[in-house]
View 1 (tube, rainbow, N blue to C red):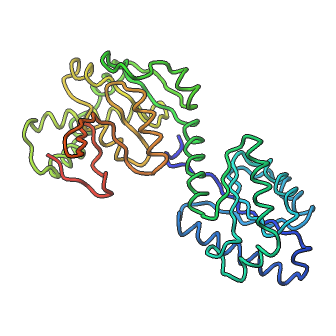
View 2: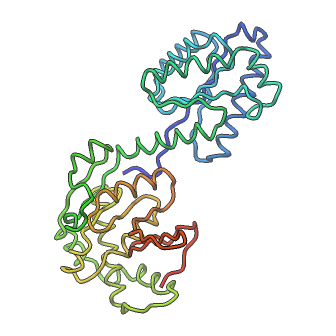
Length: 343
């Protein structure tokens, strides 16, 4: 199993033709300034980024780069003209490319930025971008690092989805009429794998879980509640036992989450999966969807992988005065990056 928040290595590559920077000292100073400034901004924006700094200034360095067979995301910074052939060749190593127009003051100090502009970096960036786009690769050309990172986030999410495994426990509830019921179609569209498991398998695990196994979870939910209105403590303990069982089931199949036929389970087992699914959605590594809703499971996974924040499926109710009321039993408690109160 992979962590749900997935990071591709980012290769920051500065391309420079020495004819525009014939002085070796000036050229190395410029490359250091570019890489230090941009990698610094990248790490400040996203401290978890994996950044490798590379410079290509001749055919030998290009060949050495190609031989290393880098994988990940390519962030290209043309620092001069006449580097287009190198950039296009280097682009073959990546499925996705960001091209940073660093010649506009802001990313770099004014002197360095204008030196890049003077060295014809602008047409090199535009030329290569048009070629890469024609090749059908996802690409972004921008003055802003944030635009490049937006593309990287999307690419990372799409790549992570191809590694995802979600369980469907039981079958999608009959009234969920808009949800896909085909594992193959979801695989074709998203790359995600669904594995069908029976509710009976979950019930067997549940029966093996003792009250002692679930006491820590149950006590936490009881102690942190502002008020307990409907359930008895034994009801909360039973739901906590089911939470332990669901976690065990997901881990057994090396899964990233579960969609569960919760109303069927409620009828047959006499307890609910709501606490379990709330906990999964609060976690950093899993998602949980109710009613066997596979579409919602896909979206929950996609949004958590994209934003690194808890996601939640809910019934929307339109109200007057531009109010949207969201209602469902499986809300995570960390929607505002801190525990929310609950009854």
